[in-house]
Image (tube, rainbow, N blue to C red; front, side, top):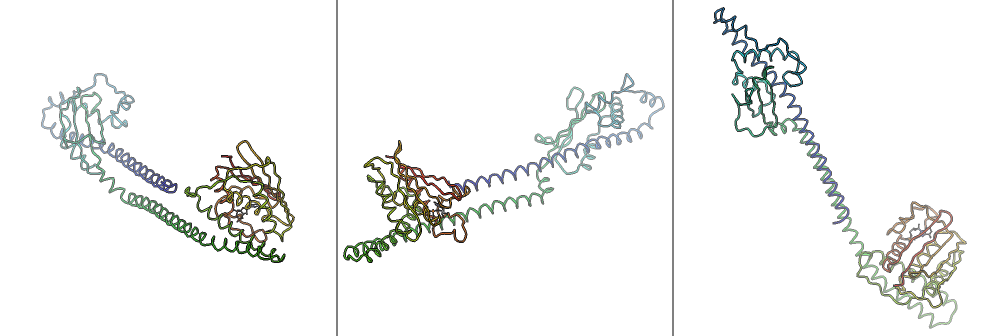
Length: 446
Ligand code: ADP
C-alpha cells in the first residue's frame, strides 16, 4: 500500500473515530439529562399519588364514628418522636426537608394499611413523564419481596432504574425500571445528527477526492517518465552518430582549425548525451532491471578525461581544475565506467557553473578501507543549509534569481545519487554559503 493511501485511510479512521466519540458523547448527555428529568418526575409522581390517597382517606374518614377516628389518629409509626433528617438524606429516603412530610405521611398510611395505589401511580407517571417510554413499577415489602407491580413485565434490563424507600420505617420500597428508546434520541438530536453526518461525509469525500487527484498525478508522472525514456532512446542515436562524424572528420583532415571545431562539437554533443543519460538514470531509479555492467575502472583516467572535457566546455570562463591523486599506482575499481564518469563530470561541471570567474575546482581521488572516495571541492557560491538536502531530489533547483540562475535541469545530482546507490556507495556534501562546496562519493570495492 502506498504511503499516501495509508495517510488517507488513517485520516478517514480518525474522522470516523472522532465523529463516533462525538455521537456517543451526545447520547451520553441525552441519557444524563433524561435521567435527571425522570428522577424529578418520579418524586413528583410519588407526591401526587400520596395526595390522591390523602383525599380518598379524608373523604372516607368522615364515614367513621368519633371513637374510630380517635383510634386511627392515635396511630403513630414512631416510638421516639424524632427523625434524623441528615441520615435519611444520605440513605436516599428524602432529597429535601420538605420530602420528610411525604415520607412521614407514607409511614402513617402504611401503618393504617393504606398502601400505594399502583394504577393511580402509573397513570400519574404516564401523564408527567417527559417522553413516552416502556416502564414498570414494582413494590417491595421490608423483606424485599415483590408485593405489587404495574407496567411492562417482560421489560429487558432497563437503562433507567430508581429504587425509592417509601417512608422512614423501611416498610416498603418502590422500584421504577424504564427503557429509554434510541428512537427518541434520534428524533431529539435529528438536526445535530444530520449536520455531523454531513460533515463526516464531506471530510471523507474531500479525502477521497485528494486520493483520486494524487492517483491521477501519479499516473501522469508515470506517463511522463515513460515518454521521457522514449525520447531519450530516440535522442541517443543521432547524438552518437554526430560524435562519430566529428571524430571521423578529424581523422580525415589535418587542418588545425577544423580539429578545434570538431573537438568543440564533439564535446558539446557529449555534454548533451551525458545529460540525456543522466535523465534516463534518474527516471529509472525504481527499475532494478537496469543492471550495472561493471568492469575494472581507472578512476584517474576518468578524472583526467573529465578535466579535459570540462576545460574545453568552460573555455570562456576563467577557471582551474586540479586533480589530486592519492590512489596507489595502477589502482582499479569494479564499477560502471560510463556512470562514474558521468557522476564526476556532473560534480565538476556544477563546481564550475555555480561560481564566478576565477573558480578553482579540485578533484581528489583517495583509497579507503572499503574502496574509493572521490571528492570534488569548489570555491564557488556555496549552498545555504536549507537547500542542502533538497538538491539531491529530481528536478530540484535552488530558487536563485537573475545572474545567479544558470542553465540547468535539476537532474544531475538526482541521477548521480541513483548511480552511486546502484554501486552500493554513498554520496554527500558539505557547503558554506559564499565559500564553496565539497561533494563526495564513495564506491565500495565489491
Ligand atoms: P542542475 O545543475 O542541472 O540545476 P543539479 O541536480 O546538478 O541540477 O543541481 C541541483 C541544484 O543544486 C542546482 O540547481 C544548483 O542550484 C545547486 N548546486 C549543485 N552543485 C552546486 C555547487 N557545486 N555549488 C553551488 N550550488 C550547486
